[in-house]
Length: 222
Image: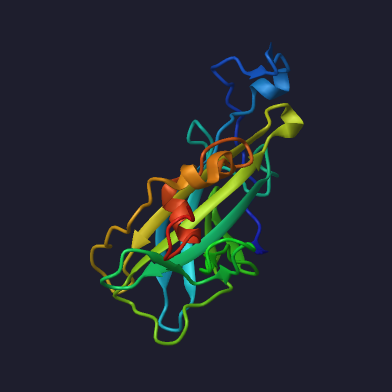
């Protein structure tokens, strides 16, 4: 993933954390750590698939208080590793197909799993707001009237401040040609197959709306 533009220098005042932070059963007393707002959230502003198949998404990144964050971790505390994925639902179908795929693990369902995009370009629009242009394009003949979904998810590293890491994900459904996206099918028994492996690196559960982007077409193996 390439950074196409650096965020302008920001004069962001650190906001004290209103709550006591517990680490390993002990209260964190570091003054520096108390000036760091934990948390992570993504909010998609818009998404698009151009006529030539180029896929892009515009989104904002904030902490738990709504403060806009620098994903590079230079203007605000904690670098954020952000990942992106795009897919679509064929009209009349109920499952997503990912534009980027990978083979399933050996011994699992013989379906193709969705995958994160790599090699795209991340452009800083303003403080905490970005446009990601996918390296992967929708193939010739893609359907602009089909429901499309963009996934943005990532992990914010606050370990240098003794605050661990925080995961977040979000999805955004849209129809490139305009109109109301159709609701995809969600398999409510994901955890019966995956259990704790469904958790993100910080222990937070990944949303089912994200999971169905990777596990396409077939339900979990019994």
